Image (cartoon, rainbow, N blue to C red; front, top):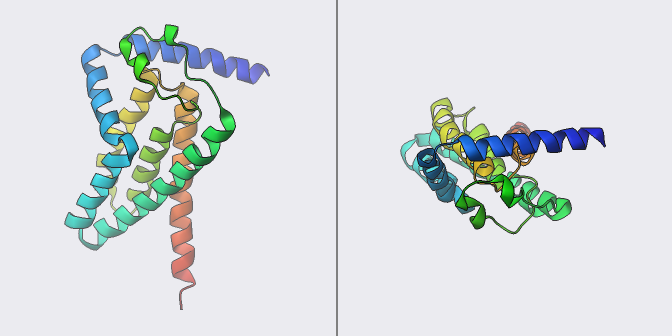
Length: 182
Protein backbone atom coordinates (compact mmCIF):
# COMPACT_ATOMS: atom_id res chain seq x y z
CA UNK A 1 0.00 0.00 0.00
CA UNK A 2 2.90 2.35 0.75
CA UNK A 3 4.21 1.85 -2.79
CA UNK A 4 0.90 3.04 -4.27
CA UNK A 5 0.93 6.07 -1.98
CA UNK A 6 4.49 6.89 -3.06
CA UNK A 7 3.60 6.46 -6.75
CA UNK A 8 0.60 8.77 -6.29
CA UNK A 9 2.78 11.44 -4.65
CA UNK A 10 5.35 11.25 -7.45
CA UNK A 11 2.56 11.30 -10.06
CA UNK A 12 1.08 14.43 -8.49
CA UNK A 13 4.40 16.26 -8.24
CA UNK A 14 5.46 15.43 -11.81
CA UNK A 15 2.04 16.19 -13.28
CA UNK A 16 1.82 19.56 -11.56
CA UNK A 17 5.37 20.40 -12.61
CA UNK A 18 4.88 19.40 -16.26
CA UNK A 19 1.54 21.20 -16.54
CA UNK A 20 2.87 24.42 -15.01
CA UNK A 21 6.41 24.67 -16.37
CA UNK A 22 6.07 23.82 -20.04
CA UNK A 23 5.73 27.15 -21.92
CA UNK A 24 2.42 27.76 -23.69
CA UNK A 25 4.05 27.78 -27.14
CA UNK A 26 5.71 24.43 -26.52
CA UNK A 27 2.41 23.10 -25.18
CA UNK A 28 0.70 24.08 -28.44
CA UNK A 29 3.34 22.21 -30.47
CA UNK A 30 2.98 19.15 -28.24
CA UNK A 31 -0.81 19.30 -28.64
CA UNK A 32 -0.51 19.55 -32.43
CA UNK A 33 1.72 16.45 -32.52
CA UNK A 34 -0.67 14.58 -30.20
CA UNK A 35 -3.65 15.49 -32.40
CA UNK A 36 -1.76 14.18 -35.43
CA UNK A 37 -1.08 10.95 -33.54
CA UNK A 38 -4.75 10.66 -32.47
CA UNK A 39 -6.29 7.39 -33.73
CA UNK A 40 -2.79 6.36 -34.89
CA UNK A 41 -2.94 8.68 -37.95
CA UNK A 42 0.68 9.81 -37.56
CA UNK A 43 2.02 6.26 -37.32
CA UNK A 44 -0.09 4.98 -40.22
CA UNK A 45 1.09 7.93 -42.31
CA UNK A 46 4.70 7.20 -41.39
CA UNK A 47 4.19 3.55 -42.37
CA UNK A 48 2.81 4.57 -45.77
CA UNK A 49 5.81 6.83 -46.42
CA UNK A 50 8.24 4.11 -45.28
CA UNK A 51 6.62 1.48 -47.49
CA UNK A 52 6.46 3.87 -50.46
CA UNK A 53 9.94 5.38 -50.25
CA UNK A 54 11.95 2.84 -48.29
CA UNK A 55 12.09 -0.20 -50.56
CA UNK A 56 12.14 -3.62 -48.91
CA UNK A 57 13.50 -2.18 -45.68
CA UNK A 58 10.75 0.42 -45.53
CA UNK A 59 8.02 -2.14 -46.18
CA UNK A 60 9.43 -4.46 -43.55
CA UNK A 61 9.79 -1.63 -40.99
CA UNK A 62 6.26 -0.38 -41.73
CA UNK A 63 4.76 -3.85 -41.33
CA UNK A 64 6.61 -4.43 -38.06
CA UNK A 65 5.59 -1.00 -36.76
CA UNK A 66 1.92 -1.45 -37.60
CA UNK A 67 1.80 -4.97 -36.15
CA UNK A 68 3.40 -3.81 -32.89
CA UNK A 69 1.09 -0.78 -32.78
CA UNK A 70 -1.98 -3.00 -33.20
CA UNK A 71 -0.82 -5.32 -30.42
CA UNK A 72 -0.10 -2.40 -28.07
CA UNK A 73 -3.49 -0.84 -28.80
CA UNK A 74 -5.29 -4.11 -28.07
CA UNK A 75 -3.49 -4.53 -24.78
CA UNK A 76 -3.63 -0.92 -23.61
CA UNK A 77 -7.06 0.20 -24.83
CA UNK A 78 -8.83 -3.11 -25.28
CA UNK A 79 -7.72 -4.80 -22.08
CA UNK A 80 -5.94 -2.63 -19.51
CA UNK A 81 -8.18 0.45 -19.70
CA UNK A 82 -11.23 -1.79 -19.32
CA UNK A 83 -9.79 -3.42 -16.20
CA UNK A 84 -8.16 -0.41 -14.53
CA UNK A 85 -10.86 2.27 -14.49
CA UNK A 86 -8.43 4.88 -13.14
CA UNK A 87 -9.74 8.46 -13.20
CA UNK A 88 -7.80 11.19 -15.00
CA UNK A 89 -5.58 13.53 -12.94
CA UNK A 90 -7.61 16.08 -10.98
CA UNK A 91 -8.37 19.24 -12.97
CA UNK A 92 -7.05 21.44 -10.16
CA UNK A 93 -3.54 20.09 -10.82
CA UNK A 94 -3.60 21.52 -14.35
CA UNK A 95 -3.35 25.35 -14.55
CA UNK A 96 -4.45 25.67 -18.20
CA UNK A 97 -7.52 24.98 -20.32
CA UNK A 98 -6.24 21.82 -22.04
CA UNK A 99 -7.63 19.90 -19.08
CA UNK A 100 -11.12 20.57 -20.48
CA UNK A 101 -10.40 18.42 -23.56
CA UNK A 102 -9.67 15.08 -21.91
CA UNK A 103 -11.19 11.72 -22.78
CA UNK A 104 -13.66 10.03 -20.44
CA UNK A 105 -11.95 6.63 -20.62
CA UNK A 106 -9.63 5.23 -17.96
CA UNK A 107 -6.37 7.05 -17.48
CA UNK A 108 -4.35 3.84 -17.09
CA UNK A 109 -2.40 3.16 -19.27
CA UNK A 110 -1.67 5.77 -21.94
CA UNK A 111 -2.80 4.23 -25.23
CA UNK A 112 -1.23 7.08 -27.19
CA UNK A 113 2.15 6.35 -25.62
CA UNK A 114 1.77 2.60 -26.06
CA UNK A 115 1.10 3.05 -29.79
CA UNK A 116 3.91 5.57 -30.29
CA UNK A 117 6.51 3.49 -28.48
CA UNK A 118 5.38 0.22 -30.08
CA UNK A 119 5.62 1.64 -33.59
CA UNK A 120 8.97 3.32 -32.98
CA UNK A 121 10.54 0.35 -31.20
CA UNK A 122 9.41 -2.07 -33.91
CA UNK A 123 10.66 0.14 -36.75
CA UNK A 124 14.08 0.92 -35.25
CA UNK A 125 15.78 -2.51 -35.57
CA UNK A 126 14.91 -2.76 -39.28
CA UNK A 127 15.51 0.87 -40.18
CA UNK A 128 17.41 2.73 -37.41
CA UNK A 129 17.20 6.15 -39.08
CA UNK A 130 13.41 5.91 -39.40
CA UNK A 131 13.22 4.69 -35.81
CA UNK A 132 15.24 7.68 -34.63
CA UNK A 133 12.98 10.04 -36.59
CA UNK A 134 9.88 8.41 -35.10
CA UNK A 135 11.33 8.71 -31.59
CA UNK A 136 10.99 12.50 -31.71
CA UNK A 137 7.18 12.67 -32.08
CA UNK A 138 6.80 9.56 -29.87
CA UNK A 139 8.57 11.41 -27.04
CA UNK A 140 6.49 14.52 -27.69
CA UNK A 141 3.28 12.48 -27.46
CA UNK A 142 4.36 11.00 -24.11
CA UNK A 143 5.24 14.41 -22.66
CA UNK A 144 2.01 15.96 -23.97
CA UNK A 145 -0.15 13.32 -22.29
CA UNK A 146 1.17 14.43 -18.87
CA UNK A 147 1.42 18.15 -19.66
CA UNK A 148 -2.21 18.29 -20.83
CA UNK A 149 -3.49 16.49 -17.75
CA UNK A 150 -4.74 13.51 -19.74
CA UNK A 151 -2.47 11.08 -17.89
CA UNK A 152 -0.34 10.58 -14.84
CA UNK A 153 3.37 9.92 -15.49
CA UNK A 154 2.86 6.33 -14.30
CA UNK A 155 0.17 5.89 -17.01
CA UNK A 156 2.69 7.04 -19.61
CA UNK A 157 5.39 4.75 -18.20
CA UNK A 158 2.98 1.80 -18.32
CA UNK A 159 2.02 2.71 -21.89
CA UNK A 160 5.69 2.82 -22.86
CA UNK A 161 6.27 -0.60 -21.27
CA UNK A 162 3.29 -2.03 -23.17
CA UNK A 163 4.64 -0.51 -26.39
CA UNK A 164 8.09 -2.01 -25.85
CA UNK A 165 6.57 -5.39 -25.06
CA UNK A 166 4.39 -5.19 -28.17
CA UNK A 167 7.42 -4.41 -30.35
CA UNK A 168 9.43 -7.23 -28.78
CA UNK A 169 6.61 -9.76 -29.16
CA UNK A 170 5.99 -8.72 -32.76
CA UNK A 171 9.63 -9.15 -33.68
CA UNK A 172 9.84 -12.43 -31.76
CA UNK A 173 6.72 -13.83 -33.44
CA UNK A 174 8.03 -12.84 -36.88
CA UNK A 175 11.38 -14.52 -36.18
CA UNK A 176 9.66 -17.73 -35.03
CA UNK A 177 7.38 -17.72 -38.05
CA UNK A 178 10.24 -17.22 -40.49
CA UNK A 179 12.37 -19.88 -38.79
CA UNK A 180 9.64 -22.54 -39.07
CA UNK A 181 8.52 -21.81 -42.61
CA UNK A 182 8.70 -24.72 -45.04
